[in-house]
Length: 117
Image 1 (tube, rainbow, N blue to C red):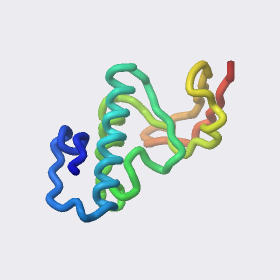
Image 2 (image 1 turned 90 degrees about the vertical axis):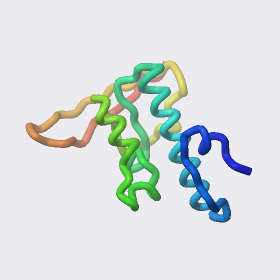
Image 3 (image 1 turned 180 degrees about the vertical axis):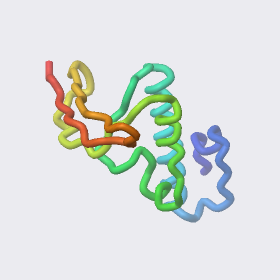
Image 4 (image 1 turned 30 degrees about the vertical axis):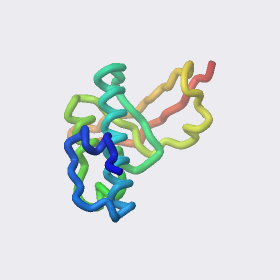
């Protein structure tokens, strides 16, 4: 059975015999859908995650940084390698992010903490 999310995103895969390929494409489409929703509909300023990159590892291993390019190209920022996200409630917490931005630098370690309700 063809995945409607893949079809709707305009991705055509001729062979569905590779579960890894299908999973990576499905993950990529799911991530893009959620990122666009958060930035365009909910109008968030930044996003954070536990992983090294916004894009799935299988994509970055092939030089595909399209999700990160989308976030940064829309003049937003992301916070990577966050820990203890499982301890922050889905709603109601205030997240404080503090970090210096060195001149001509692309990023810097952040100090991030949540104030829980």
